[in-house]
Image 1 (tube, rainbow, N blue to C red):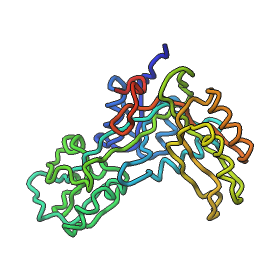
Image 2 (image 1 turned 135 degrees about the horizontal axis):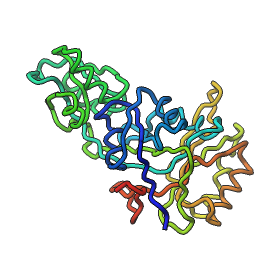
Image 3 (image 1 turned 45 degrees about the horizontal axis):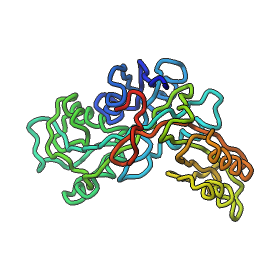
Length: 300
């Protein structure tokens, strides 16, 4: 039986009360969670052994992919010899609240601070009330700033934990445009934690590059279609400052050592200029993924 991945120290980008902090607590309740001021600091903490794992958001159900982490992933997987690997995923329901210092009323608020992804998720609320969106590095930092600055026209969009952490009052609960809101997080580690071949509900994340030529993507991915392998993600990236999509991130169901998956990867390799597996990990069982027992070690 595979030993659960249970790091003693995990790191995340943001401040106490950020959703990444909440994801750390949910996934690894016994671990010590360390906050970092930037994504690069998060990556470096794992690379140097200060932390055993990082929890970073990669996509949101409403706002789409989180740009920052996807800018880092190609460097992690292909350009760095000491890069990190994806060892798990976490799905966290997101509840966004309008928070401000005690005594404020909604009528006083003119500016709302938060992470741009969170602000994207409450656009209708802000627009209906004529509130200006002010981008900050993360939701918890926005809450701390509003508390520290003390401007009566300022509020933040943040979690309930952030409101409690920074002594703020919730003016409006659950202001997200769509109540079905969830963020997916990657769990990154320095060394792979690869599930056994026989384990069910496995995802593989793979990065590959192609020549910019007609039919290149079709030919590279044809083996997956022929084998009936379900591809759950396919994203393209601009490379070297050119407006052509030659780098792709894909995720698919199946262990790379399974015969049909291995053959599909072999076909991709023949048609790509280079490729790298970013991680092989169990699916996190949520309402979004209709899978059976697919938790990541300590993730429940």
